Every structure is written in structure tokens, then in C-alpha cells.
Length: 216
Image 1 (cartoon, rainbow, N blue to C red):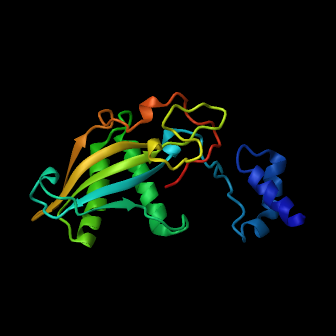
Image 2 (image 1 turned 180 degrees about the vertical axis):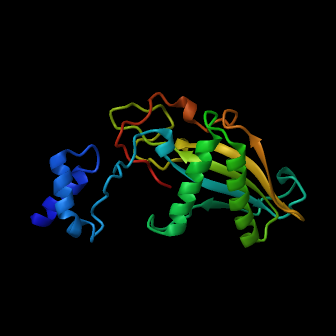
Image 3 (image 1 turned 30 degrees about the horizontal axis):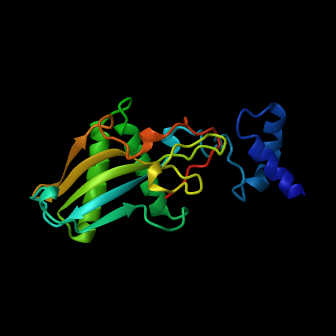
């Protein structure tokens, strides 16, 4: 009971804590921080339901020859990053963070081609070298948060399948290839020009705060 009380106090006190809560957290700190139960002053929200809170992943279509356009050669394979596995794995978390960062700076309100190009170049070059490919079409796909049950969904957005591809939106798309100077990148279109797959059919608004984002 004492253990649960200590954990409950520190978790309830991580945002706008009162003077009493601050004193209790200080008293319990030797125990709760030792067990990593104390988030200290970091707000402990899973998501606010904003697009930036939704999961984003990399999808790379790989081609053999770097000097030829992708449309003129057969697809070798498609790689999705992060792939399956535990969310506790460092590589999986890193790819989620990079994809979210690229999606953020691909947005017209925050658009920064220097940042997006550098991330796309680095990720594309690594995967191409690992797979012995010369060219890739790199996309950042955002998995939209499924609205709560009280919000009706349009046809094509299944309520019982939050990982359905209908919830995916292409945020960024670029060609990445290898030549004698290293990895090159050319964005195909701006974020405002990349059309969502089916998301224009949705009748609902954004998800309510606290709604979990469906991970791939």
C-alpha cells in the first residue's frame, strides 16, 4: 500500500504540482527515483491527439541502379522502418523519432528542406548500402490516430482495425540514390502537394486528448 501511495503521488505531481505535492515528491525521491518511478518535472502525457503525436514510419522502395529513375526499373523490395519488435528497442525508438522529426519539418508551417533532406539522405543511404541497392523512393507515412468510439467514421475507416492502411497518410516523399559523390536526395513534392490515401473521406475531427496513437 505504501509503495502504491508513493508511486501515485509522484505521477499525480508531475504537472502543475502544489507546494504539498512538491514536498511529498522530495520526501519520496530516494525511493521513487531509485526505481525510475519519478518523472520529475516532465509532463507525462502519452498524446494530446495532435497530428505530431501520431506515429510516423519510413517506407522505402528499393531499386538496383542508382543512375536510372525508379520508374524505369523493377522494384527490388520494400522496407518499412521501424519493422516489428518491442518498442523498448533503441533502433525502433530511433526510427520513430526520426520519422516524426521529418514529418514535423515537412509540414508547410514548419517546412525546412535542410533538415528533411539530411534525414532522408542518412536513412536512405544506410538502407541502400545494407541491401546493396542504388536507388530508393523514401516516404514518411503517418498513422493517424483513430478517433474515439463516440465519433462516427466514414466508410473505409474500420473501427475495429486501428492499424488499417486507411489511416495512413504520406507526409513526405523523395528520391534517394547513390553516386560517386555519395548519397543524393531530391524531394518529389512538398507536404501540401502529397495527397492522403483515403483520409479525405473521414467525417470526424482530430482525436480527443488521451487517445492512444495506433503504432504500426
